[in-house]
View 1 (cartoon, one colour):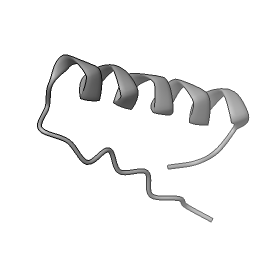
View 2 (cartoon, one colour):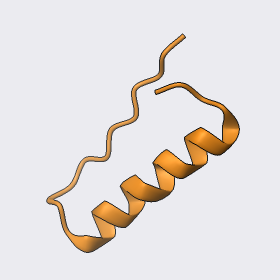
View 3 (tube, one colour):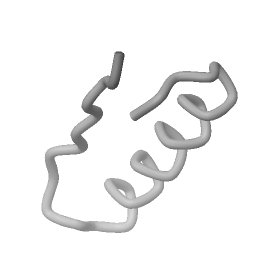
Length: 33
């Protein structure tokens, strides 16, 4: 099952960092997205 992870924001550095952290956490947990 594929999950969809969306980061809704304006593209500021905090949003970009959140996206990086979310991707890293998903990979670490073995979640396909």
